[in-house]
Image (tube, rainbow, N blue to C red; front, side):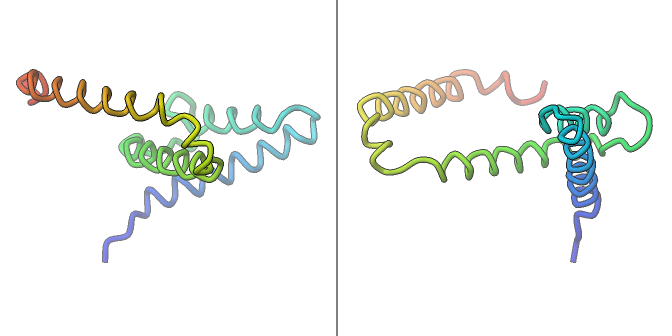
Length: 113
């Protein structure tokens, strides 16, 4: 069975670093968000020391989108969605139509050549 050890290591390392720097920022009476941002800078590819695997960026981006969508979904109720249906439904149909037309008319642009 294949295990995604680099992905797990990167996530755990980033979370631990963010937690520690967030606690330090909180002790200094500044927002923990500053510590989280600093953790991202320190784990990034432009600083010496622990560097996250840059090949994992697409996987981490997908995971981030999944978590963002989950979090947003927790805060919406059916009543809220029904209140904006007059804007949301035509907007969704227009977005689908435009994306379909773009993919249909410009496929040679996206073949990698």
